Image 1 (cartoon, one colour):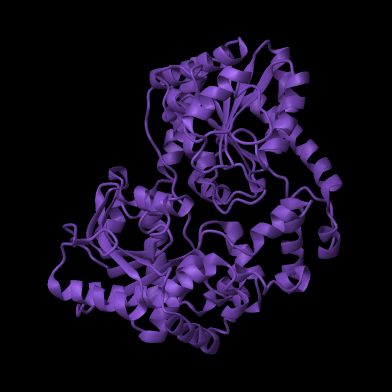
Image 2: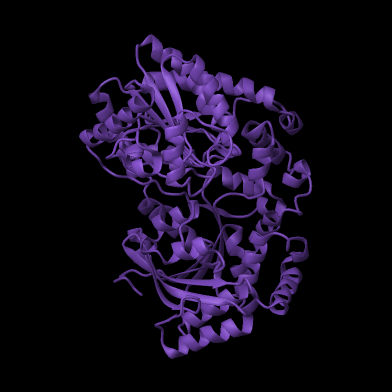
Length: 590
């Protein structure tokens, strides 16, 4: 499919990703943005997405076939669909019989564009075939698969690799391509790259696209010093030519680490943020000299009027009044997953200082935290029952269907804040969605999800580990202040897009660079007491900056709308495709 292209540079780009058939999270958002960007569609002749599927997961299969997923199936032995020519159908059947897998092929919409998709279910793949492949992986890449076979994720991607590559060859056919690429999105995409290297060496240029560094996330999350410790260690250890395993010990038991360590065998490496580049260099001496291209994530950018913003804000204010009995002057939000890396306690630390400032100015605020441990959220009937029985989401109870896991300590922390605060209250909406049918009768009837983006005065996102952080800056073009941390990869893109100008729309909390330590061993000793002191000091500074930046009238709101939209435009997916992805592919192609 040539999409009417006039200036083709790359004839075939294959994206190896676990979100090939279904958007599940961050990589899905990246694919939506990049694969519909005008420059991408102009420069890339043909795009094929390749990934696994699980036909034994009823929910996944339902979502895959749902109209909103915009997947047009042309071949699927599972769905009993066959609308391809006989030659391709025979090739798919041969692959299924030889490997004992199921194949799906079709088209999927990404924005206004459509691209080909190949999915393979390897749940019942023949062990002799997969073991032979694992033997080759050991010989060529040193991967000891027997150590990781107890991890379903590892087996899923490894077992699907060879049959997926054979299906890709069947789809591509005898076409000759001058420049063809496979981009492995995270460790999940590397097995397809391995299959290409082993079966057809040199045919594809290969790229590892690091959306994070899987080894680093648990080190940051599980250390009491979090980002304050880790990034101070990284900087000082690298200066001494020491690497991650020199400092933190052997990581080879972690299957994701083992896979990522092979990424230097690719022709190129892309990283979504400046800190991801540093983290990759820290993985080992083979990465320290690797030539890594920055390919940031894009930021959604929509232009709305001040009237549109005020309508959405009024709905949020009314919801606050329905819940707590007051109309807040300001609405703060944090839309995120409820996991340790999101640093939700830092929102409370900032509000502890901001609360007094607002009280002195006779202003009020509310923070809506829309965050759930359960990805799909609670069933609507449970939400309505909890609301009627005990006043959810203002009041929560431990245990299903309400609070579980990390939701419990966070709720206790916000309860403690709410008991003593004067001007601001926090409400945890541990649900997926933002409408009356998902969140209860007290939510305004006309509320929709975009209201929590458009109507927000401030979005928090002070993560401890955040390779980029699209969600933190999504409300930028809607005139919201975006309060992020230096651990967020978006900081580097914001600085480049701002071109040296001071912008009130983004406030950055630096919980890393303020640690008073000498060598890496001193940095390694940073624990919770040291981090707490640094966070308290920095939270006070961030609160003062917020207090001085919050709009006090509609003229100030209008300026934030204008500046936020202009900054968002300079960070769009089109900018990423044009100024980062295409140069990265050219670099790898050379």
